[in-house]
Length: 280
Picture (cartoon, rainbow, N blue to C red):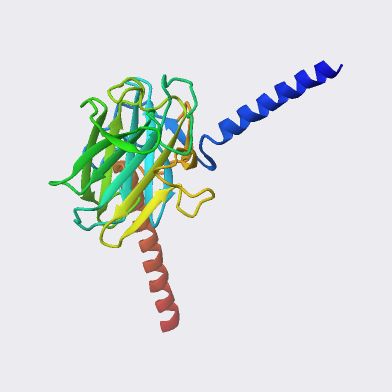
């Protein structure tokens, strides 16, 4: 009986340790759902004003008005992401950072978290703006980040200063496609079907950093601590709540114009009638 109890206790301890390990893989207070798009891959030109390529995407706001929108496609199997920030300066030190926590084999393996970036963790930095921007990849070495060279197939990126359906004033938009499962030029797939992610933007003009998860989260979000990043989970459907407005169709414009004419006619007629009553 005593041996049976000890065996059961050992199994329970192992189970609890495994659950703790899974829970520590990322900050469970920051979970983002990655929705699937059944459309063609978006055109990467640094804007999403004139089309609905991103209509299936989800949106995650961070910092002071910044946000990222993303979606995945089955064929080709790619990760599509937009990051837009409210900054419109041309400072050479402005920097977008995106970190990915993956595993050796990718696939259905969950992220491994940890207090330091490992060889399965990757970091993308885009410094500066169109005309002078630089793109640099990094891989973890168990304690820090080291520079790395990725294939040209891993990332397609365009940046522009523009206006969008969700932020009206001119601001910077980073639009990208990542070959996140098949490209292994950084030693392993970028991520599996579930991963941890960190997104930040440093504004050299103000000296401020906007990020997800935020620096005041518990635990604090940091590009150097994978277990404090946010979790990304899959959905096999489009976002049921549209977060990127579709452009108005000709029919919708005609309908709105007709409604405006009817309302204007009604108020003009009512005003004329009131004047006649007062005159009489």
